[in-house]
Figure 1 (cartoon, rainbow, N blue to C red):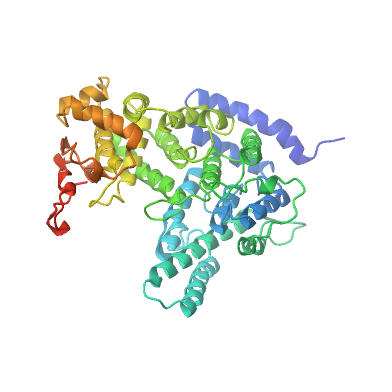
Figure 2 (figure 1 turned 90 degrees about the vertical axis):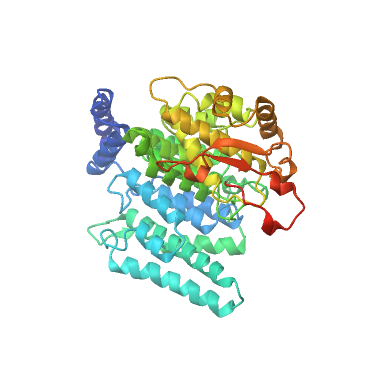
Length: 487
């Protein structure tokens, strides 16, 4: 039986091209991202790359069940569906650019931010119809909610709901455009339409799963779980698609981040947990070049940022489950950045794993910086008051070491005069066992940390070192008389 054109491309043309391109990569003439983009362009040219990486019916059925069970909300499902689109209208096969735009979309907190993330402002990518469609959806939600809600304090909630709906609309436009195909010389039509997605979104309210004979779409029924699809459902799909070159590393990490953070919220802001991963991604993107990192290193660090926390509240094992679904370089980096639950924070994690790998050190520094933005200065947690400032100062020192190896964390703390050895031992022990307690419970035992760069000043050119004083939190006086700690 003769091969079709698609089968010929899959069996002969694509493997031959990948081999030739791989040689150029090994010679240093192509970076990993350039190699990936070249292969995607070639697959498209020979008709080997489809418009959606998986079978539509399989994905939509299993996704609907997870949405109906509440394990995926409409935004996270739209995000994962977008990640499976093979050709994004606004990426031009530059999946790094696609990920930059998606992370901006996730972090947008106004309709203006949403428009900017999709390039609606300069109208380079989407046409006026798309612009009007997103803005109309935003306006519709605002009006619908404001008709029902006029209670004081509801304006912010109305805006969040409307912005979230606008975000989803941008993803739906991307999905429709990216899955469009032409049949028998007819006009383009999307394989997955906004109507298809809206039908699934309605299941989020009904909470009625569709009939799924395989039962694989509805395995995760634990209300305490923070993720959607179970490992044995999502990981084999990703592994096969990545091995076949149908999805890139950028698509893989977005799928993983959206899936394993699907039900998790930030304690301080109640925002989706994926917003923290995206924020760390953006800090790396903004500052990495100032620390001398090369483009391919920056790409790897950004990818690692999106998945650095997915093993924290799940049973996802980085060293085991990442094998075969991302590159070995990314596996190695993420293993360094991820802290195992039994690891000592200072001695084994910051002082060892991050000490000798500057990429891991920089990701962790960006992670600490973002986690410190929401500190309550009147009553911070122990780790925010003591653990983070010491770790951030040490990581900054590691990044600034050029020719010599960094000194140990113990030697650094003593050398900089941050505290005495007895206090340092107390901080290390408390970090490992009691880091979630409020600082007011221990401030009397650790009144001072000296010669520290405040975390919010880490990325300034001339940071001023200060003394952190928390003893005032133990005084039973009018809070207005208390000095505010410089954190």
